[in-house]
Length: 77
Image 1 (tube, rainbow, N blue to C red):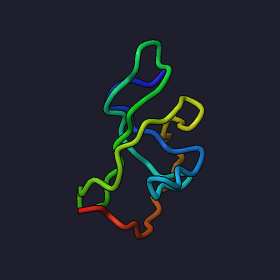
Image 2 (image 1 turned 90 degrees about the vertical axis):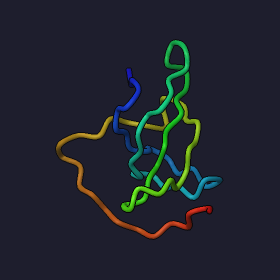
Image 3 (image 1 turned 90 degrees about the horizontal axis):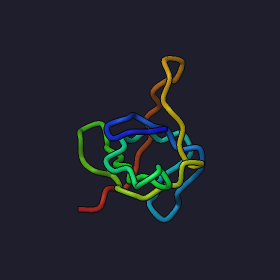
Image 4 (image 1 turned 120 degrees about the vertical axis):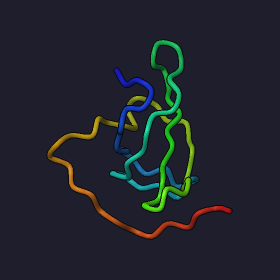
């Protein structure tokens, strides 16, 4: 089960927020029984790229075997 401040990676695209599978974010809210999560995604300069609600099946824990990958995303002002 995920908890607040856990680092997670998407397992699916979230096109309405411009997010792609494997984008990494931080859990900022856990709904009761872990039925859903609010995850914040930041750019490398710490600008918020998206804050979105995801289902447990849409995220996984980040592991020591993951590698950082950079891509450009349009950040809303």
